[in-house]
Image (cartoon, rainbow, N blue to C red; front, side, top):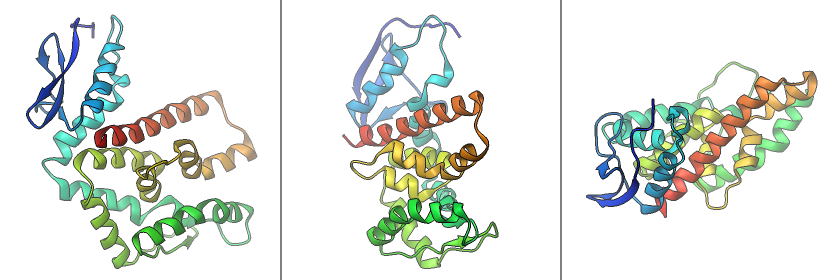
Length: 231
């Protein structure tokens, strides 16, 4: 699609801030006014439009897509979104380990346990660690507490969590990313520990490295999205 606008601006709107193109407020994919809670986030959304060349690249609108998800998906059905996010807690990558005694298991314990123990202390919960690939349920009390943690977040933070958890296959990593001072590169390394282990053993290729770089950029953008929505 060719660029169809000249002027990009940020304007106050009912309930927050909105990007306008040539004086017309942007709407979400679902046709709702794309109103976000802070000017800082609106300016970041505007920057995505400003940076387009003569041809618009839909894949470059990472923040816009998260804003639309908050407005079109989460807003109309918060309970459904939270239930979906809890599945990333039930099958959290960080809870599934190689068999004890294997070198990979030792690395998993060394690298993952600090994050898991911090989460357990923060929310007063207990995670079941699982060896092998056979799924086991997490304690009902743990899932109930995680639901309450998610319910306390606003729609825009939940949109960021959805992106983060989808990329990391881990609700623990996603929620840790929302903490002040979180390190995107470190959290991404934890989420990709097994992939990195395989790359050490067998090597990686250019396509895999490019895909990982794009996923890390999206992961980092999601953390920025959550922070801007709270500014």
